[in-house]
Length: 450
Image (tube, rainbow, N blue to C red; front, side):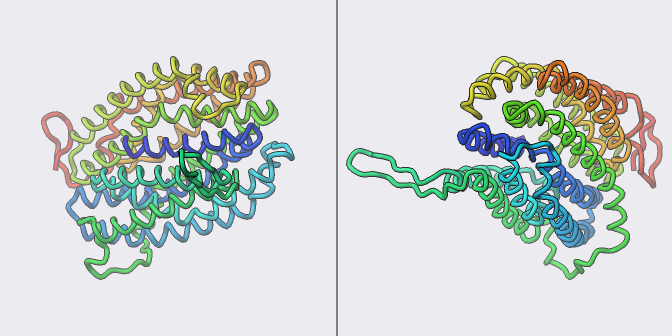
């Protein structure tokens, strides 16, 4: 959760700094933010296929196997992310027009987008390094690096977004240089911070982490059929799922775009503000993936089930509290991000709508992490896909016509409650925790223990 908090804090820093530039600059980032989530999400999902295998190897006390997976994961991640970056660069300039952006914000949107997609190989290595460390049980290093990335992001953004500042301190004047790059500076600052942390986390994973010291023994970085096929079986459904979910979010952006610059900015900033609320869910979901993955690798389904139930219950309890806080402090949260009164007011309204969905949103987030840990990604991906495309998108299109942005977020609230419900049904009423285990015998409780 500390790692997630640092990541969310970084989003707040970006949003609040850009928010000071005005509604147009805020909208230029908000217009392409969902498209960036698409590119980030599929690269992150791709690395999960290797992280989960590392967890299984560590659970089975096969450190050499974990090192082999990491070596191949580095090569495959770089190849995949470079291809993805080339595709992103190719569509960077027409994309804002496809999304319905006005001529005043499209050029800045394209510039912001192209900086991030060009840096995808570095960001993907960051995902891989943090993922494998978490899956071997090392939560401390990714958390520390996330905090460092947050601090670097704050410093670099301040230096790159704004012009040179002069502060009178009594007898002398303090001058802090600034590049005055605006939206471009926000992209460069964040990418710079993430690139530095990617280098550090990969060094730690490959050289310092005992289970993963890939140079400790000889081994090839060339992908092999077995590990690649297994990674694909885990990550392909997740990648497809991220693609279709982000595709739905892009569709939502296209529904919001005709509502005007204020609605675009309020929607983007409210999404950033809400992330503080669901941050604990993703933190617990990451932990659940590691715990259930190692227990699955050790052949202990009863422990897998216990970790799954405990994680989901904890996530729902914490996010329920966060939802209550978000409801009562929505205006204060938006005030941190933007000084524009119209954006702040509309953003606070939609946050209060979304607060009611947080408990069930937690159920879907953490249960998904539980299922990923045991290598079950296809059905959860289908559940996410069906929920967002069958419920959220059509409902948002209908309600936006009469309720504007409030209708879009009402549709989101309804869909998240539905999604959480179907994930809970699968968690509570199916034997998901025994799938894929071999070499086991049945114990007195009907579970299989090695």
